[in-house]
Image 1 (cartoon, one colour):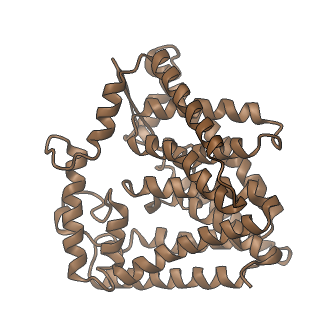
Image 2 (image 1 turned 30 degrees about the vertical axis):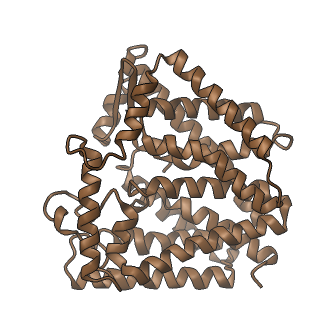
Amino acid sequence: MMVLPASWQFERGLFLFFICSWAAINKRNIKLRYCREVLIISTICLALSLFEIVIGLINNNPGAVRVSGVFFFWPLAYLFFVGLFNKIENLKPFLNLIILGLLGVEILTIIFISDFLGVTSLGTLQIFEQMNPSINIGIYEGESGLFHAGLTTLNFSLPFLITKIIIDARRNEYRKIDISIALIGILIALLSGRRALWIILSLSPFLYLVVNSYVTKKIDILFFLKIFMMGFLLFITLVYVLQLDVSLLLDRLAAGFDFGDSTNESAFRRNEQYHALLNGWLDSPIIGSGHGAAAQDNINLAEMQWAYELSYLALLFHVGIIGFFIYFASIIWMIIMLANYAKEYQNYSYLVLPLLVGLVCFLIANASNPYLLKFDYLWVIFLPLAFLNAFCLKGSILK
């Protein structure tokens, strides 16, 4: 899910089916355990999703059936694993998998670039283009552009790893390897031209400072200044080595927020979506138009008419103010409870803080791209939820 193209849905579904089948066969040896609060919140969200899917079916929304998986059936499958892996010790290996997944994305990207530049001739670019036409790569004078499905993982895994490196100054014996992986990831992020990725990487040290200050009740401004200076020097070094034009980079970043420029297709399209979704929400502000609905501007204009880059405004349009509040409050509740656990039991903060920074960074990136409308990235929500469930069962701070 972290490395391979999103078009490999059948293979992933088949793999998940075999895991669930194995669990069902060996159910005598398996105990699904849930914290009461986690179970209640999850049930409320699932009930809301089912209600909005039914509303979508009643309204004949074009995507009502398609989104039922990501809003109801896949969350059910993920909740099965949340109950299955109900001990902190069983969840720790998943944190290492995040780093391995990041390394896999980096290796794949390096191979892509190597094939593109003619250094190697493995044919990987052509193979993956057939499976996922959205793959794109281009390197120009002063500017570059790079995209494949695996890069989306960087929105979580790179801030996660950066935070882990900061925390594990003395704890992690593989810190040099982690730093190497992080530096390669930062280089790829810079080459990618992905504005959202640039923003969250810039924010991740600040997010760590905020979360760490809440957990430890200390504000280390000097440490933050050190991190800022190191990041700035790293940026200058990469710009010099790669001969990138800083003015073009800044113009590209600013262009993403120039919503009035009709020649800027991406930003102007978001502006159109904003007005269409807002008007669509006003037609049914309380319960929304149901999952899978398409606003007037998108009807018959796209294959996935219900998917919008402004994903949170689209969610408001789909589920209304009540549904939006329930989803939003559930995520905030999870973040606060995890932070509270790290605050009370600081020996586990090295597990919780990277998860929180990675989660918040991914949610920021999701604001302008509907990543969470794919099965591939739902783990970003349910892995922190699994940790919260395990923490609550170990010695709940919620009671």
